[in-house]
Image (cartoon, rainbow, N blue to C red):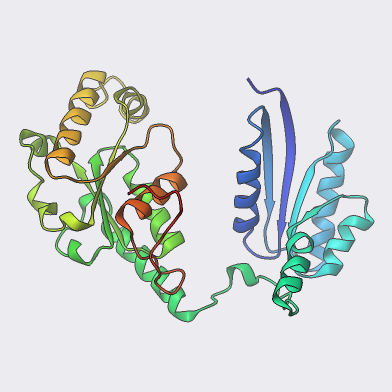
Length: 287
């Protein structure tokens, strides 16, 4: 049960995605609090900063609990502007940059928007190619060139294949396709012909029948597709196919997309395209 509501502001001179993701990771440690989040992206001028300050001051005057303000502004004068209006900020640059400068023995560039700049042109092109491939190979819409995929996710409908594929493409520049198992595929324990030729790239997703039932009820309430009996049947047959073909699979019932993606990378020992094509590794990797 939630016991507290907390306003949180994320202020960035770029998209705000990075700082919001950091905040979200921190908030997970406080399950008893409902965080009401507001993101202010592309705050790169004094005029824009003052507009945000005015809004935050309004919240400060109307709420009993002071808001939490995260900033990732490369321009120190803008951060100081917030401080001059008695708005305490959690500045990730002042927290981490001095330590990194000390360890690296060099000064940071303090470039505005650097966290989401193009950076390496090669990696930028790889990300665009990965996203294009993933979108074109969603939900089994294109199966003629699955051999070009870095990974092919398979499983029953609504088991989390699409968001996981998009995450793998966005964060790891991997070409991720997905193939949904359908009624015809459950007649046999063999891999469907469409994906039998890419077995080395396959990874299965499963989940509890109860969770699948709940998800499908929101999409097609009171239908055969969403019935608990149908969900139980499909999950049972899908897992039988995975086991018969020795396809690694993961129960996604109670874990996040980030955790699913990490587990997939570990299990398949995939080479990502975000760090000079080094294979993903972790000391806690599941073999």
